[in-house]
Amino acid sequence: MADSTDSMSSTEYERLTRLLVERIAERSLVTTTRLEHNVVLPGRASPHQIDVLWEFTTESGHAHRVVFECRRKSRSLEQNDALAFKGVVEEVSFDAVPTTGVMVHVKGFQLGARKIADTYGLIILEMRSPTDKDVKGRLMEIRISVTPRVPVVKDLHMDVSELLSDVLKGPVLNYTLEVQDPHNGWIRVMDLLQSGEINPTTEVSTPLHRVTRSFDPPAVLALDGQPAAKVRSISATVGEELSDPFDVSIGGRENLAWTVKDVLGGESAWFTHDGKVHVIGS
Image (cartoon, rainbow, N blue to C red; front, side):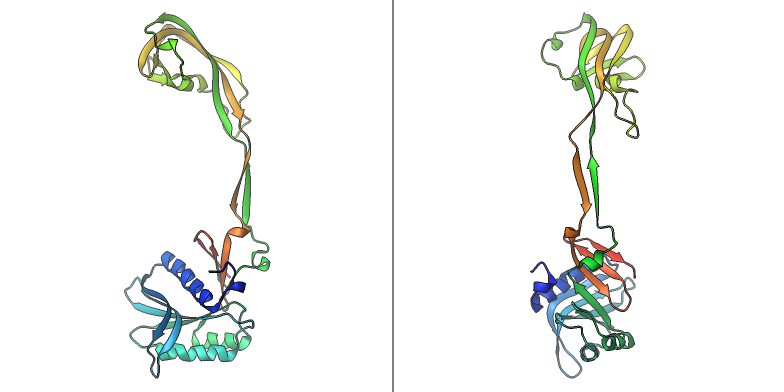
């Protein structure tokens, strides 16, 4: 399927209509029983080809049918176009299943077509690729520049009063160290040193500074849950360092795929490339 309604064939435009109806159906409260492209329906006098057919049941269990006629003319549709489609809708309608007719076009509708639609209950829609005029004055994209603040604990030093094992002789990762708190059990050394030392995110980043935690009597230090030593104090340089900044974009004109506008009511729906639907009032 082409990316723009300007370059689509009539069949591609019909398939696009079916795709967008499917997206609307997925977010509606009705239960879809049939949604097809290029269907022949029996009529009172003769059968009729329908570009897109949508049948569903409402929350109350009532059946309903919507027939779509998709036009891709270089001109606005006229009164005779709407009258001809009105006749098709009446032909395929029957009392057991109420039928609504929807005309879809890329170029709009002349006044006569609008009057026919308004008089006989047809829905007429403009469905096309969005233009600069469609998005003028609307917020389309939010760009955020982020500089992460990373808490750090480095240059760790421990005043050891007694070794309980030889596990400290090899390389040690700071986050694997714990110290025994008589009141709160085991606590990570990293958490102990940072507690109360890091500014809230609403304030400036925390400068690097020296922090010391003392223990009297000496506290038990453990590595990966194994007692390693008793320490009189633990000190380290604590603060925040700034990582490389990066930009985040939300939305964007390029994410907007299609726009559908109710010609009579003025309500519009925007469809994005990722499948989302945004409905905007008149």
